Image 1 (cartoon, rainbow, N blue to C red):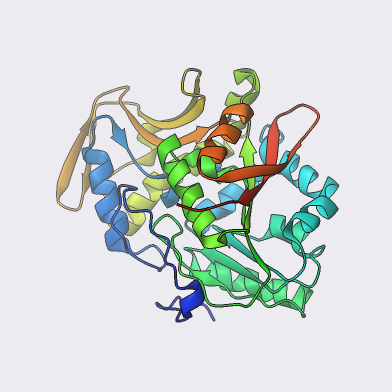
Image 2: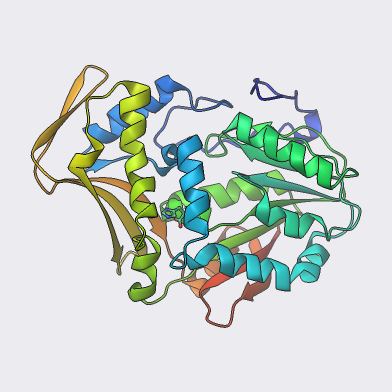
Length: 343
Ligand code: AVJ
């Protein structure tokens, strides 16, 4: 099954809580593969901003997902291998945190490489719900997982987790939201808080969140992770321009842009930009966008967390850090958060 239908499964009352995050600056398109009209409208809105800024979620078409898989294997890109190391080394502790008969939910599930490390150690899991916008990718990954773990109840849900998820009902003793990969870093702090609050609501009181975050560190480590020697990240960034041209019939030449990554110390974030190499015009959907030489399109933020500050923010949201796993260099952290009273 590669089609993404909406609603995929009618939610049962007990889990019918639809988690909505209303103000993430994009129209609520519900569950679907990237609909061209939403993509177009978001791009027009982003290029109309001053400075120009677009959403990183549009990096991930088939080509973009492939490039991201390559990024995760780059020598400079430490987050994936550091987090995989933590998930492997602490597999039992994580399974213990989830507890028996747990329903695991993964928003933005992707290729399921990380959750596999967790799933195989769970004690009689109630089920696994991967949530992803890319329907074909999701159903393919779910199929592979079912072959590997035939006893596991895998229920894929095709949805954009930033606009709300409604889950099928599955009886369980505890719900745990798994959100690895430092995806939280793509969101502004206030959006990140809202997202965590929505996950807390999804897990419910007594539930949990397993959160993987990238930590602050020397920019000499951070910047190359987003500007690698082989130029894979540059290709990933420029893929957005290829999508504009190929899918939205934009008049734009990707070769007239350069990739740039920089670390903004006061904000604790890595920014990616596409730098215009000349004065030029992008035509898109009947609009023209002028770019001066050196002007940039800000395509991604990747916030690096201060662990103490993050734990305090979680506590404010009613999330207690039951366990914090970090590597010896303190480059990455996996937090096991217990949901107290949700607001
Ligand atoms: C998928 C958001 C975790 O911010 O490190 C990798 C995406 N961008 N290289 C990140 C990304 C450029 C990545 N996240």
